[in-house]
Length: 111
Image (cartoon, rainbow, N blue to C red; front, side):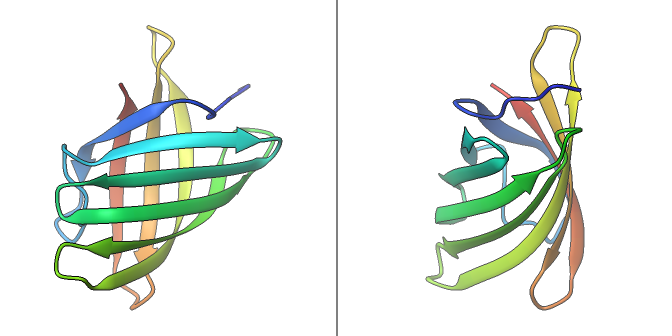
């Protein structure tokens, strides 16, 4: 699957209960070669940043950190697997883990 993340916007449509993202969190992705970054904010998140490396199948191995509305810094890692929808947009399936060890899953869709 040939994937280009750069310039795309995503919104969570499904998330684990222990996620701080919501349908009002917007992710803006950028890409330079195999390096993929994103900034995100909205809902319980004041500002966040993600940086990752994409493999030949478009799967991202990434680290993220953000500042939530309670002024707490949160960090973690995730593996993101892209799915191309019939309309050409991307759906991202994320398996993530907070640095404290708690795990979760999220699904983001391109907007």
